[in-house]
Image (cartoon, rainbow, N blue to C red):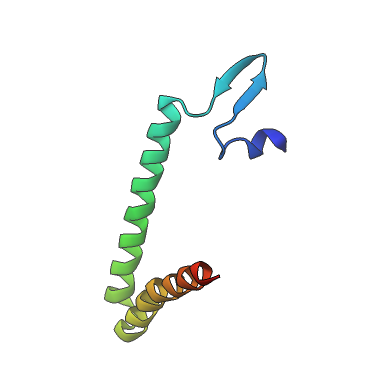
Length: 78
């Protein structure tokens, strides 16, 4: 479990030789995942407007932007 928890921190693994998880391969993999994630989001929004109820899709999209902004604002108020 401790091995899996080091992946997101970029800490060194202890397999004999220290190997960092911030290698160029991991960085490119993260970039590829980010591009695929953004593409999936855009595809989902397009499908929601094309095949779903336009009003519901608009309300969900607005809520998905406004609610996190309110939560971030409330977090900084403390």
